[in-house]
Length: 97
Image 1 (cartoon, helix red, strand yellow):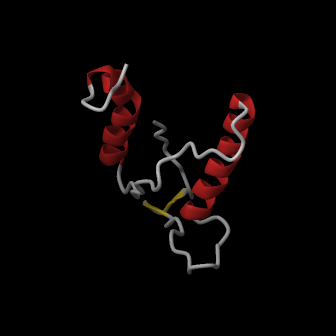
Image 2 (spheres, helix red, strand yellow):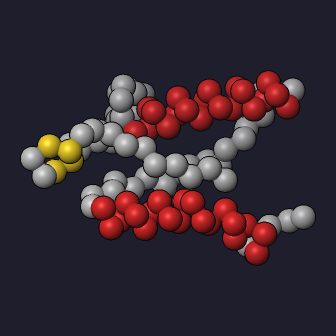
């Protein structure tokens, strides 16, 4: 499972710039979160399938969870979850040896 933080924008006058998140169906917009995630997943999928010699095989779940972090407390909580949650995988009810 992959979890990541994507930082977009800079801190100006006490507020962060809003990351563009909306696309119209069939009209991808560059530099939106969905477009960045789609490009990342496409590139990684090609590399994984090349290494595994499994061209065309899906390696991702169907969707992803997107959340805009608005303050430092939220950022710290989410960062800790991303960092420490994989350590709990062996105890997860979906884990199969």
